[in-house]
Image 1 (cartoon, one colour):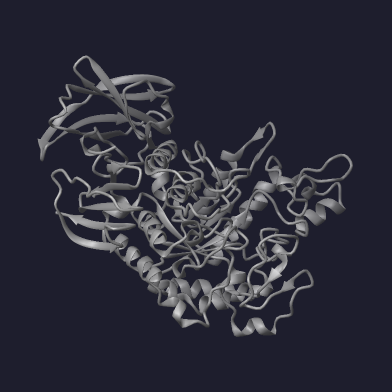
Image 2 (spheres, helix red, strand yellow):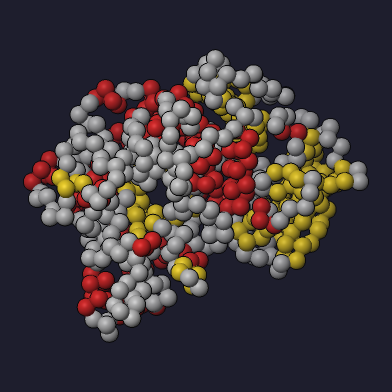
Length: 585
């Protein structure tokens, strides 16, 4: 698919949408760009109000530079106001929605939208996020004096992770919060603005997703005092800190669960799903992770207290674990109500708090309202990139699938990406995390099989709409075949590991994204989508950026009417995998 710039275009960026959030009753100006040579006779704006479609004509605003700009007005009638455009040429018409242009009837699922609810805070949208798995990041000197817990299988810092089996979650390296604090300058050099830590609450595992309490920080990490030192040191460097909260379950040693099991008349008994024989339901069958019943009114207030307490302590927001399953079980679905309550509590304490959901698959419908600001965008970003840039010579397990990651061409990958992101909506995608890997998935270096292809993946991570999230160690080219194997320790004792071309790539991409508003807030117009190469524009009133990425040798991309001026970043050459980021005059 080439010459896509001639297609009609609209998205949720400032060039096309006057405001992405607006109170009910607000009239919002929308614009559509068409090619002046396309012969478009009319454009109709189609809105959905109370479930019924209404049509209004758009008018020509101006014709300049080979483009005709049309303008219309959307009145925000419902809290999530949907709209699309009918582009009329002669006796035929096409639909323009967030997923593209169609010469057939399409569902409303991919319509554009304006929300009556506020979006994510600016700092959450403009940031580069860095994920830290505390047990594997760094050990301070104080960690040497702490006893190894009885549940743990101790490991030396240089040991490889156990990739599978019963000891996976018990292998204990002893990384702590002061160790993270000692290495904050590495994050600053890398261009990071937000640190996301997996859980810091006590739990009988190295991952701590089986919390025994939400009222204190694990003493093995240094306790509340070490958390305070980390937060203060991060804030002093201009960094934000996100906590990780398990809203779907606790651990089976959690104080609530112990009380629930011991006292059938306790308030906490209603927090969990117990059968008549006294057995309980665990997340995905894991009995050590008893599932929470959010129909229990008292649980809501208890959970709100947890959300509020740590925001008052000093963190800047929450990443919510297993958010897709929270409040959902069989015939019960109050997921939106739980998300709304968590966000309402968070912003009542800290108005600019970020509340982001873990959602390992299709988050359609979970990001529209006044709940989660965004998601870890696996299906709308990670999966398509893994499938396009994976090394075809080695099998790589796929996160959440029973088969290895398949290899697809660029047309399939980008089509999938466009459809998923369209169903989330522009604003939610812009606030969601572009992840190339996490503590739950294979490492991007292992998936791609080379530094060159990992760098191409990183270019897309930093230049497509969304917030880049780096899993600690990706910048060093660490490998891992699955989520457990990926939780390798940072090699702080090997200075050479921190002087890699991959690390320089991440730092440069973070700087380029920070310096060019178009890469954080600009529109996305596809220029070329082919089997082995893609090209797109990010456009903003402050400037335009061109991005080209090829996984193998390709023919030069046709740039109709575009003049690249400054090369902002480049990797590889035309004889193999390569990518370029240009400023357009």
